[in-house]
Length: 375
Image 1 (cartoon, rainbow, N blue to C red):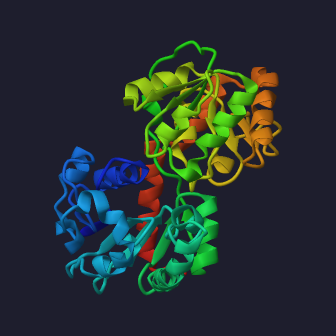
Image 2 (image 1 turned 45 degrees about the vertical axis):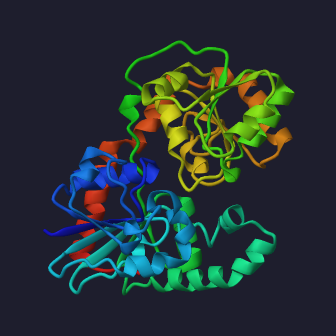
């Protein structure tokens, strides 16, 4: 079977590329299509695929400035040509990959990280709310129209969502149904060995506004408890400059160092709302509880005490992104810390593992190929 994989861009190894990596393992003979390809930035399995990139990839500075070319993305994806004779198109999309023209006779399944985040649910975070947002309104409206048109059943024959949160967005913005298949998490990497917990909480940051590291820093300034912050990003320097003395910034860490931090922390602090969020699952694979904002993916992956389904708790939720709410959740966790069982937490994380992802994807693709489009 001739298969085409489609991905928004290949400029680094993030959560989306880890999903694409598993698709490449499922279909090692596939051809790959993308807007921008910076060679050597992903995995050997992805780089081994014959890859066609859009004209944007040849523009000067494409590796650094491609995000600024958002208005051109629909045009760029329309320039990608999948050959006739292709039977399955499998896109991984949070922007425009799902809008690729599909040849006659091919079935297109889109694994959707979220409807285009820049113009829907996170438009304020990316475009602001002031004068620039007002100037950008016609652009946003045009991109929304394109996004809805390209989601039609004549373009995407089956949606797969990464979470119930994203399934609801697909229904709301596209008026389409979606099957939920959680992304793959390499849980074995984090449970390979045990380490004794130490007296610190952990946050893994990307340092962009919606990640809300600022909220955690303010809460821990009030609590006076030790917090280690791993990771790097645009806003790190400003936050580090005003961090209290009980907060230590570890910077960018290796996969091995991150796994050790997970295993040694008292709990992971996760103040943001994500479409899914791999970080809480990684922490749970290491046997550590999670203190998470109770919206988005973490509401599905972190089990609070007194779960109505009777599942063993793997963390606590807080209801609002405020300092009192987060600080209260940390105190609640400390008071109930003996309720969290390391092995039960690890067992919960197994449900998000790679073998499960491969099995569910194959079943969904086989069913779609057999039954055809699903509205």
